Image 1 (cartoon, rainbow, N blue to C red):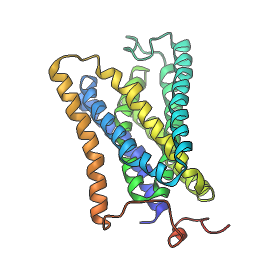
Image 2: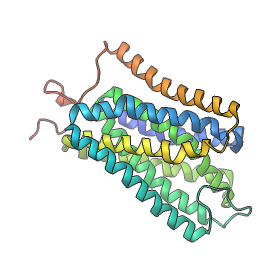
Image 3: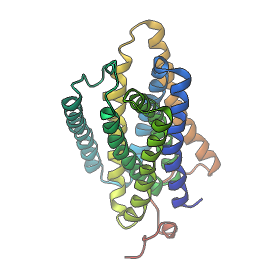
Image 4: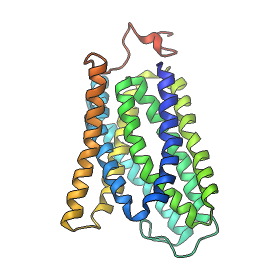
Length: 279
C-alpha cells in the first residue's frame, strides 16, 4: 500500500471507526466500565511515545532540538488545556473533570465538545500523516495509539452529547461528522509535509508530547480515584496490555518486513512520497 493509502486508511480507522466503537461501548458497558478503556489507552499512548515515536524523532533530527521540542510541546499542551478549561467552566459554571450537572443544558456543552473534538481530530490526522511519512511501522504504531486513546475519549464525548439533549442518532451523526476532520488533517499534512520533510522529526516530537501529556496529565489522575488493591492491579495489568500491544505491533511489523526498522526516506525510495527530490 502506498504512503497516501496508509494515511487515508489510518485516518478513517482512527476517526470514524473509533466513533462507532465508542457509541457501541457507551451503550454496552456504561460509564462505570470506562476506566478499563482508559487504563489500556494510557499504556498504548506511553508505549507508542517511548518505544516508537521518540526513537524515530531522535534518529532523524538533532537530539537537543528534538528534546527541546518535546519539552515545549508538553508545556504548550498544559497551557492549551488551561485555556480550554477556563473557557469551558466560564460558560458552563462547572468543575472541569467532575460529574456533569443532573439536567441537560440545551446543547451548550455538546457544541463545545463538537468544536473541540473537530480540532482534536484534525490534529490527529496531521500526526498520523507525519508518522507514516517517517515510515510505515511508526505510522501503524502511532495510529494504534491514537485510536486506543480516541475510543474512551469518544465515549466521553458521546455521553456529553446525550446529556446535552441530543438523541442517540444525532449524537452519533455529529461525532461521525467531526471525525472527518482526521482525514482532512491527514491529507493536508501529506501534501504539505512532502515539501517540508525536515519538519517531520519535530512534528513527531510534538506527537509524542501530546500522547505523553494526555496519558500523564489527563488520564492517569482519574485512575487514582480508585485506590482499592483490586482496582490498582487491574489498572496496572491493562496499562501493561496497552504497552504490550504496541510492542507486539512493532515485533509483527519487523517480522513481516525482514526485521528492518522504519526511518525517514532515503535516496533510493524518495519517489514514494510526492515532492521528495524535486528541489
